[in-house]
Amino acid sequence: GGPAATVANLWQDGGFFPNGITGLVMAMAVIMFSFGGLELVGITAAEADEPHKTIPKATNQVIYRILLFYVGSLAVLLSLYPWRNVVEGGSPFVLIFHAIDSNIVANALNLVVLTAALSVYNSCVYCNSRMLFGLAQQGNAPRALLRVNRREIPLTALAVSAVATALCVVINYVMPGKAFGLLMALVVAALVINWAMICITHLKFRRAMQRAGKVTAFQSLGYPLTNWLCLLFLAGILVVMYLTPDIRISVCLIPVWLLILAAGYLLRKKSAPALVAMKEG
Figure 1 (cartoon, rainbow, N blue to C red):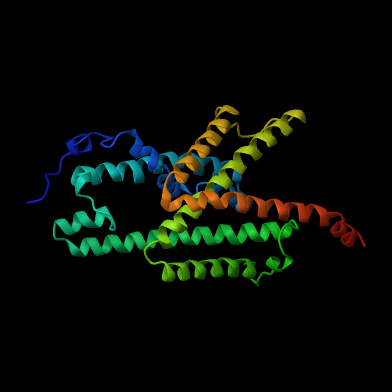
Figure 2: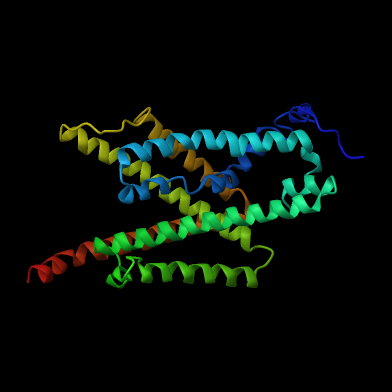
């Protein structure tokens, strides 16, 4: 008695943009949240045995995985279940199996989703602890973060991730209906800052390499135009977030966060000569 499963569901009932291009634009912040973490590939380069081979391979595989796991899965989903039948607050894939009275498969899929979420969390904890440890090695973070155990695991940096996780649990307890939206908005704001800094750093790095007469091993496609296009896209994301009342606060907090980073940088720069003198002494 349910809707007929057909590939035509992809373009029927309003086509690919039933609510116009505005619907896609307003969803860009959520889409960016889904793609957050791609930059973590660069962090693993320091511990890869052959980074000149593994990093380009991993980067190129991102495109195929997007086509398979994002575009492909959505095509199957919409072919089986028209978009108007998808309700907010539940997994569309689970809804499909519930619709065909297959609760066992639906529960199994829930387990897969939870496992995937834990995998993402594991990657974030790993990269966060390694990043904090690296900053401490450079003198840009408290030396307490350098503490490691016998297996060379940065315990203090790992504890920082644990505290942040506990804070998220508290937020979810205090604001059960709004916690996910708020945390998602904060993550997207952090992604905007990270990706913007990556683009700007890459521009400055390439210019420094050119002045030194050196050639980079990996050429960026479309440099420097693609860098500026990426920065323009990030600016557009900020506009979309500001126009969305529920996540506007995250945009307003970006200047505050940048001021904190700037203050930390100036303090570090001011104390650098004293640290050098202490090491030499």
